[in-house]
Length: 278
Image (cartoon, rainbow, N blue to C red):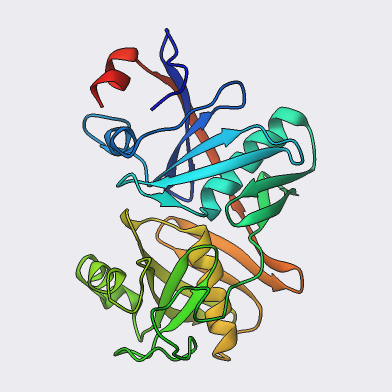
């Protein structure tokens, strides 16, 4: 759970990016390894704090910080775009730096102050190879052999994007989990339903693997922007409209840049009794 259990509890921050909410634990001063049961207990919105993802900040010798992510069910996640952006904003404000380098399982990610309280993160190059996404068999990621002709994209985690006439009309609470666990996706998948909302604008709703419906998802926004460009529906620079707000996505030569607002909501402390009960 925690390698050195704190006598006075475990401090945390609550943050959100467009309503996609996170518990963030700053472990730069001491290692924190939350067990799946503890992660799930913290995620409980009645008995814990509640979150879509949990993130741990660790010290890094060759970067400003290392980030580790967990889904609400306790499973690990290689990346979380909105959490990365929230933490980048926190570190920018803390250090006064305009640019940062963050290390995740996805690799080294650049982050910068975009002005006006907005923060940009380079989420890296999209993964377009079927084995690396990963998919269970050699199929065309641009046209998966599933009803609805979806697109598969890797952004450090797998994504399955359905372009539909009306994203609002999809019963995502049923549609999302039905596709998350299909045999084609050996690591499960995030599921998006998307429709064009104007020139270079996309309306997206998302089901996140291991979490469920969320108000926003940074990596999903990057994935749908890449999928739309690959399908010729948009250019490589788009605005993605989510339930919680909008993100600007720019697929450049050096990677997929995501820009949006963040919020540091409050700070708290998990009591020793709570940590021991999980």
